[in-house]
Image (cartoon, rainbow, N blue to C red):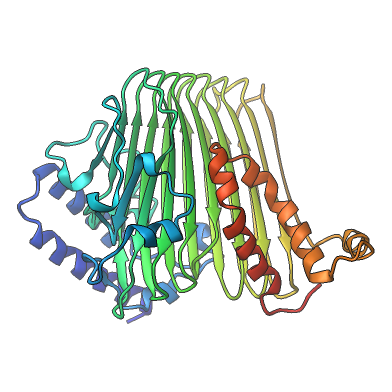
Length: 442
C-alpha cells in the first residue's frame, strides 16, 4: 500500500475511535464529525498530481505515526507561555494547551458584550453553523480537522461592539516522545458595525515532532471590521496545516496578517469571499524559510459582487535549501463590476540552494474593473551591500540589515503597535537563521 493510502486508513481509524469515545456529544457535533470524516475518506491525502498540491509533498507528514493530542503530562506555566508568545496581551489571553482550553493559564476579558467561549463548553449549535464557511470538499486537511474536532475558541462580537484591546489566542504544543496531532479551531462571528482585533499564536514548548491542523472561520457582518493576525512560530520539526475561510458582508472590512516563522512543512490555505457590495479585504503575509523547510501559501480572493476592494502583499525570504510557494488566485465574477483588486508577491533568495515557486493569478469575468498583479524573485542588491561595507558594516551584518528592511513593510502593517514592537527580536532571530542557513551565497 502506498504511504498516502496507508496514512489515510490510519487516520480514518483514529477518527472512528475518537467518535466512539465521544458518543455522548450533542447530535449536531457528532453529525458534523461524521460528515467531515466521510469527505476525508473520499478524498484522502493530496498528492503532487493535483494542481493545488503540485509543489508540495505531504508524504513526510503522512509517514509519521501521529496520535491524537491529549492533556499535557507535564505542567505548563504562565511564564513558559509568556516566554514563547511574547508579547502577551494579558488583558485578554486565551490559552489552549495541546488543543484544550486552559482557564488557569488565561486572563479572560472582563467585557460583558464580547463572548469568547471554549467549543467544548458549548451546549448548543453555533449560528451560522460551524463548518459552513470552510469547503471541506476541496480541502482534505480541513475535513480531517473537522472530523477530529475537540476544542477551540468561539468569538462572538455583538452588534456595535468596539473591542479596542486585542484578543490573544495562544495554541501551545507541549510535545511528546510519541508524535502528537492537534486540531485547533477558531470561529469568529462579528455582527453588524462591530470591531475586533484577534491574534492567533502557535508556539511549541519542546523540540518534539508535532502536527497542527487548524481551521479558522470568520464571518464579518455589515459594516463590521475584523483584523486577524496569525503567527506560526512552532519548532523546526513541526508540521503545520492551516485553513482560514472568511465571508464579508456589505461594507465589511477584513484584514489578515500571516507570519510564518517556524515549522518543517507548512501549508497555509486562505479563502475570502466578498459576498456583498462595498466589502474591503487586505491580505498581508511574510514567510521566512531556513534549512530544508517548505512553506506553501495558497490564497483565494473571490469578488462575487460589485464595488469590492482587495489588496494582497505576500513576501517570501528563503535561505539554506528551503522552498517557498505562493499561489494567489483572484476571481472577479461576471457581475462584479467596479472591482479593485491588486496582488503582489516579491521574494528574496538568500542562497543559491533556496527556491520559490510563484504563481499569481487573475481570473476576470467583468469588464469594468481595476486589477493588477505581479511577482518577483531576486537576491540582495550587491551595490547596497557594498555601500554598507564602506560604512564599516560587516558583510553578514549588511545582509541582515537589508533582509530586515525587506520584511519591515509587513511587520509595520500589523494592526497592533505593541505586537509590531514585540516581534522585532523573534523576527530578527529568524532572519539571522535564514541568512546564516547552510547553502551557497549568491
